[in-house]
Length: 418
Image 1 (spheres, one colour):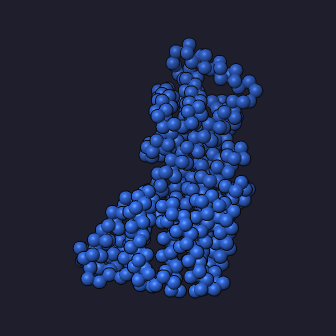
Image 2 (spheres, rainbow, N blue to C red):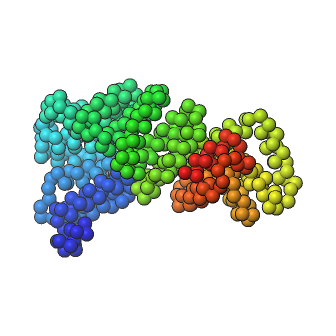
Image 3 (cartoon, one colour):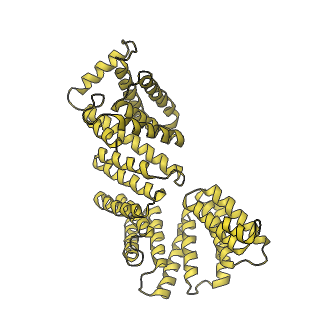
C-alpha cells in the first residue's frame, strides 16, 4: 500500500487500493484477528461507497469476508446479513446455476459461514451446489474448486459429528490435491483436517502419519503460524494418548520453538500451554512411581518445614515448591481462579533459586511450568520470557546426570538444551 501511495498519491482512493485492503482483511481473517479484519473491511466499504466505479466481485468478496469475520465472533445475525448481500449480488451477476468457477468459490465461502453459524442444512446445500457446478465445469479433472469444496464438506461433517463422511471427504480432497497442488500449503491443510478426523475416529497411528506428512510440508515452506501450531499440538496429543509423554513434550516444545507469536491465535497458544503443562506433570508423576522415590519425597517435604532457608537447603525448598505446584495443577484441572495460587508457589521457588544462584534441572522445570501457566492465563509475553529463561538455564547445565530431577524427568531437561 505504501507503493500505491507513492504512485497515485497519499489519500487517493482507487480500485487497486480497495483490492489491497481486501487482501489485508483476508489476511487478518487467516490469522484469526477478527477485530482488525472488520475494521479494515469497514474502511473498504466506506471507500467503495465513495468510488464512482467499483467491481461487483470486490463488493461480493468484501461482504463474504465481513460475514466470515462476524461468524467467527459468534455474531451470527450480522454474519448472515452480510452473507445474504453477497449471495443476492452473486445471483444477480452470475445467475443461481450458471456454470461459473467464481460462483463455485462464492458457494464454498458461504458454506463455511453457514457452518460457523450452525446453519448446517444451508451449508450442505451450498456445498452440494458447488460440487454440481465444478463437475459441470471441470468434469472428472482434478481442480482447486472441487478440492476446496471437498475440504469444506469434510469440515461440515466434522462439525456435525459425521466422522466417517468427514474422513471420506478429506481423503477425496487429498487424492485430488496430490494431483493439482502437491506439497503446497493447501495440501498441508487437508492433511491437517484429515488427521483430526481419523483421530476422532480412533485411528491414532493413521492420525500421526498424516500429522508427520503435514509438518514435513509446512517446514518446507517455513510456515510458523496457526496451521503448524495446530498440527504439532495434535501430534503431541496423539503421543499423550499412547502414553509416550516424553515424545509429546518434545512435540509441544517444537511447537513453542517454531511458532511466530505475531501471527498465531491466542486460543491456539493457550491450548498448547495447557497440553505442555499436563505433559510435564504426567512425566513428574510417572517418575514418582519408581521404587524408593515416595519415601525420598516425604523426607524432603518433612524437612522443608524444619530446615532454615540457606544455600544448602535451597534445593529442598525448590523441589518441594515444584511438587506443590504440579500437585495443585493436577488436582484443580487447570481452573483459572486457582492458577494464581499455583503461580505464587512457582514464583517463590524461582525467587529462592535466584537468591542462592541455584541452577539445575528442577529449576528448569519450575520455569517451564511458570511459562505454561502464564500461557494458560494469556500472559503471552511472560510465558515466552520464562520459556526462554528455562532454555537458557538448561543449556548452561552440564550434560548427563542431574541429581535434582528424577530419572523420568531428565529427558525433558536434555530436550530443553537443544
